Image (cartoon, rainbow, N blue to C red):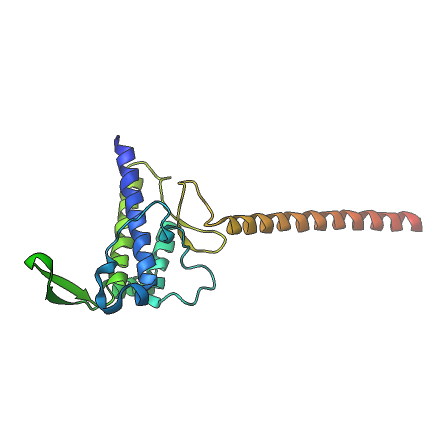
Length: 210
């Protein structure tokens, strides 16, 4: 495995970890009752559901504020723009979630520390920074086109790319964008034809008055 292949593997792993925590943070009430350790990322296969979900689509009002702030940071940075002060403060809040620790007597005689609080959101913020840092490092090494996290130009959602050159999050968004562009061309051509027809009619009227 050469240097570029290693960098691609590291970046892809960081993206999968990011989306694992996105899924868990979004389902925090189901998967983190009483601070359960299910926040730890475990990959169960290449078809994991959390790698197929699109986050932060236009019109999404159900995503918690802390997760929305992290999605905004990802969106802005992936589009090579600079985040504003409010977005940075929101990310700072996500990174400083109040976490408490208690211990219990685990198996094998070990006392295992258990974290309580919004662990998933905090770890998600850390994963987002880790992914963006890894992406910037790889880009600085000359691999500017390698990126496994996309921002859909149609719905503005954040998604895990199946291919590096993937542009739209789903086939539906790809079709909507195509239809929208085709509609623009259709109406532009129709307007052009109408203008040409009006010129012909105007010219015919002028010739008729002579």
